[in-house]
Amino acid sequence: MDSSKKDLTVITSCEQLPVQVSPESSIGENVINNAGSVSESMEKENNENADDANAVEIPFQTKAIIAILMLLTLMCSFETTSISVSLPYMTDDLNGTSTQAVWVGAAFLLTSAVFQPLISSLSEIFGRLALTMTSISFFFIGSAVGGSAPNMTAVIIGRALQGVGAGGILSLVEIIIADLIPLRVRGVYYSLLGCMWAIGGACGPLMGGGFTSKVTWRWILYINLPIAGICAGLTPIFLRLQLQEKSFKQKLKEIDYIGMIIFTSAGTSLLLGISFGGVMYPWKSYNVILPLILGFVGIIAFGFYEAYYAKYPMIRLAIFLHPVAIFGYVQIILHAIVFCCILYFLPYYFEGVKGYSALISGVAILPMSVTCSPSSILSGYIINWTGKYALLSWISWAILTAGTGILVCLKPENTAGQNIGYLILGGFGTGLIFTISNIIVLVPNTNENTPYAASMLSFLRVLGQSFGVAIGGSVFSNTFAKQLVQYPELKASLQGYSGGDPVGLIKVVSSMPDSENKTLLVNGLSSSIQMVWWCMLAFASAGFLLNIFIRDMSMNIEYEAAQNVVSKPEKDIEKN
Image (cartoon, rainbow, N blue to C red; front, side, top):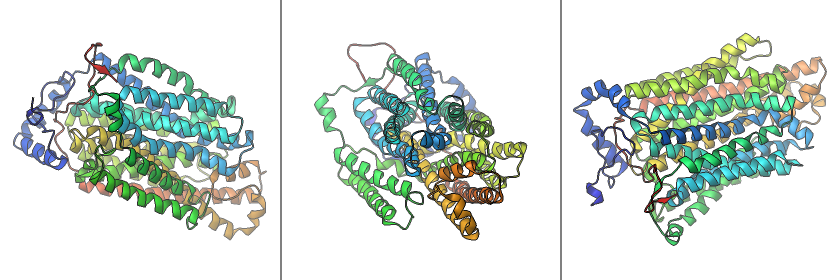
């Protein structure tokens, strides 16, 4: 059949919806045509929104796949945030340095971000299952290496391997959901993933603190082994997808080797500069400026190559054509910056300013997860019910902005009740945005570019996390340096603190007896973290204002994934 005359259809058993998309049209043409085809019947669609959503039936096999993806997301999210509370104890146990402590976190974020587009691209060629199993294997091996590490270098290597696995898992989770679930109800399932990410992100410090205080920090890594093992056993059973038959030689030809080399080099350089800045080296140092320049130039060169020379591009630049998608991607970065920075610095506030143990610090962060998780699910069901998301995006960003601003009220004299109240609002807004941001980006890209748009979601989130930690760390170190200028007598109390990272400072403060100098240090630590909250308020406000460019578009769009679910093995179907 002529591909130009073949309509894209939903791969599940949902009713056929009215909008059709030509697979050979550009993204901009698809969006304009879709909008025009539904404008005359908009009132009718609004009345039938709930009926359309209820008509979609998801088979058991797909639900089982979703459950596995949720567990994998929870595992990766937990590992992203749980390690921060254990770093002071880990460095003491292994006689590490503050620089090595920084690399424990940076290695994970760097490899996670850089490998996401690569693994996503390879999954288009070799299949989702093959790359999912490869990613789980990397995460498993990295957890084993890091957990059994005899020194900090081995921990860093383990975390880097974990990052490769986590990057692959997070990008493939987004793609597989887009493959299997119709856009009309996709918000519900993305909300479940957002719920898992929120639970893992907020409970990570709690479990990390519990393992560190009651057992050993090594169990933060060991706990992943049974989870990864279970997922590795169940994934091949349920994730049976149809893949177009090609020879291995043809698959090798479709790999974008040059694009991968350029992107990996540029991404690594950019993230190294971000990680070094304000922590290991001053921002004006050539050790920071040179990697940043090389990274940005490399990204521009990568985009030029992909647009004009790549026969099989690793990333399709067409996913950035629609303005709604562009501003949606920017919102994803801003959301990741704010969310990750808050989760990164809250343990430092509770441990350094309030004097809590790692375990109690994790408990103190729970109010954020208690509100973040249900709000993520709530936003998914609201989108599913109404078929709209623009107004909800305004409301969600307003709540997050207010919740970020109120963190400025976190001070040494606060009661536990006050701290709980301050965290609830931000957690609620964060959860709402997890689901909405996915939908905003994918609605304009519901065509053959959907997998590429979905993989970009997770990549930009990790990139935003890297920016969040780097920006927060830079603001913290610069503000605290100004505090030391005002109180030069404190320098004698800071032996062992090299400057630039909160971990070393908290170690010094916690080891000091109660004294006037300790009070001054705690106040300086509190003021420096408070400045971080002010900075994050600016980013949240920017995300709120970008809603000016977000518009509702029809979600009743049909899409046929390239890799469909296969319920039973067949001889003539190649399973990836």
